[in-house]
Length: 476
Ligand code: FAD
Ligand code: MLT
Ligand code: ZN
Image 1 (cartoon, rainbow, N blue to C red):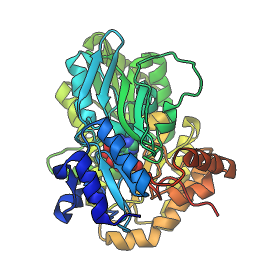
Image 2: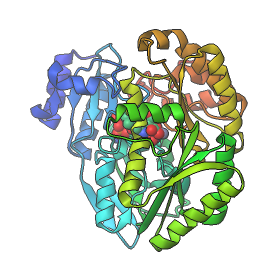
Image 3: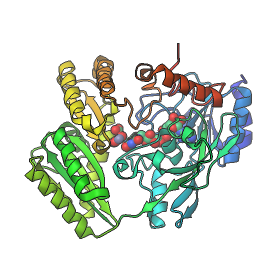
Image 4: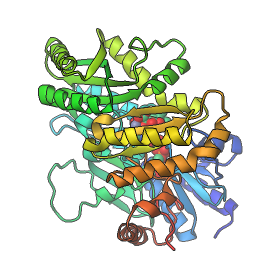
């Protein structure tokens, strides 16, 4: 193991001294996670500007046994993007690799460097009269490389799938510095193992993603949304069935919001008003989009809601009457995440179960939490259309956040995860594993699955230098 000064000199020589940060005042934003729950130390933050530089940095680290934490926008909610406190790793951040390389409107693809932010990728697609459909609240900071490394989800998965469904090709630097590339934009290619899939959702443990080819979609011309008070989570699932039957693929988003989640976000956004009178216990934000006419889309929304009322599923509804209403509805939904951070952090359970079990899951988990910590605020929201809810109990307003989390995090999180597992669900639907959920995998993945995951890791990274301590639990 080289001393840190030698590492800094060698890596500065590759990327240039101004792209190798070592002063604590410069590195702090990279060594601390978005929610300020995880604080680590790094030898240096290295900011390469080309794939070749990434390859040279990784080759040097491989030859000298230096650990690397790959980092994009550092918006991970699981502590996956920052090093631990040992101070023996570099952070390799891709933010200088932020060029859109090509847009092919005949092939409907976009090729870009991994450090392009999601919002820039969406803007570039829009300028080419196309849609890049991944949509998550952190889009201004998170990067395409990070979205691929976490297989990000978000609010348009119902219609377009998650990141895995949107990636056609990847370029990645392997842990020994070799460059793997499948940047070809093919929708069909049966020439053996689909190696790019290894990197999608690998959370920086198998390679540094440096570029990608992404699918583009037709750009919608019409959009409408409604906040709907539903009788119960079970009624919401029935309403989704009606919407899919009547409005087909125009159903783009179907997001559940509990009354506690809505109260919290309205408290946090001082100028926001709740969309429905009397704060209903359960709401859904339904969005339809299409390439057809606005009038047709709006009347389709009205028809679905009328039938929902007739069938006793809906108690009340507010339909957006303009694009700015649609945006205001989305702001309420998307700010729920930051509102919890501001309130001191909740017990984050990002879980999925089959859609047919989701109402049952919510009922059972709700009752269990109310027995364990009766005063908890039940911040429950998210991508119900995908069978994915963020089930995040939060401290009562009068209690100290640390005290609440210390007392209840482990027991509530274990109870919720146990219930999810008993319903054939997943303890991490979209946020990944990082360090936050790493050891829970020991309980919820079979020894065959964990053994295979480690075999893949050892085949690519036998020295365990890429994002060590993340995703993979130690096996006895
Ligand atoms: P980082 O946080 O920097 O890294 C995440 C992981 O990917 C780490 O393990 C890191 O090592 C690895 N990594 C990053 N870049 C690379 C690369 N180039 N090569 C290899 N590995 C890499 N997530 C959702 O799925 N759905 C949501 O709706 C959603 N909403 C969010 C809202 C807010 C307000 C916030 C703060 C987060 C949200 N997230 C959501 C979580 C997060 O934004 C996503 O996981 C995102 O994809 C992470 O991208 P990033 O560039 O910030 O990656
Ligand atoms: C969301 O859906 O808002 C995100 O996944 C972020 C979060 O739940 O904190
Ligand atoms: Zn989410």
